[in-house]
Image: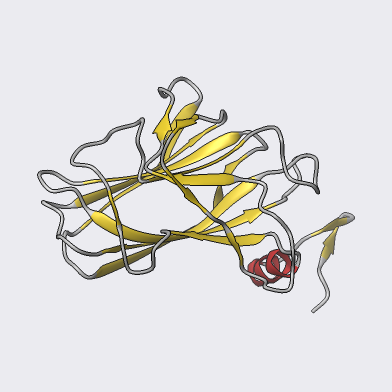
Length: 194
C-alpha cells in the first residue's frame, strides 16, 4: 500500500508504522530476564526504585544522531504470591536520565531477527534512581485486582515518549504484600526529533 502524501509529508497509518519500525530494526521487546519468574514490586510507591526503568543519555546509538524512544505497549502478569490488595501500576517519564545505580540489567531483543542493530537505550529492573524533581511527571496510572494469574496489556498508542535523554519508569505496588509481576514492554526507537 503506498503511503499517503499530505503537503509533502509522508503520513503512515498505525499498521504501517508498526511494520516499518520492525522492518527497520527499530522495534524492541523488553521483558523480565527469567521466563515465568516475576519481579517483586513494593508495598508502597517508592519513586527511587521502580519495577523497571528504561533510560538513555545523549550518547544515542548510530544511526540516528537525534534519537527518541517510545513505549508502545506494556503487558503485565501477576505470578507467584498474590499481592495484598489492588495493584497500582504507575508509568512516569522524565526528560533526564535518572538512573543512579544497581538493579538487574534487562537486555532489549529486536522484534525483527533479520536486523543486526544494537539498542540505543538501557534498562534495569529494580534500579536505584536519583530523586525525582521538576522534570518528571506521571503519564499513566491504573489499579488491577490482586488475582493470580492475571494479565493486563496497556496500549499507549505510541504516546509515551522520551527524547534522546530521558527515563521511562514503571512502578508496581500493593498494600501489605508486594506484587510479583512478569512484564513485556514493546518499544520503538530512532524516531528522529524535529
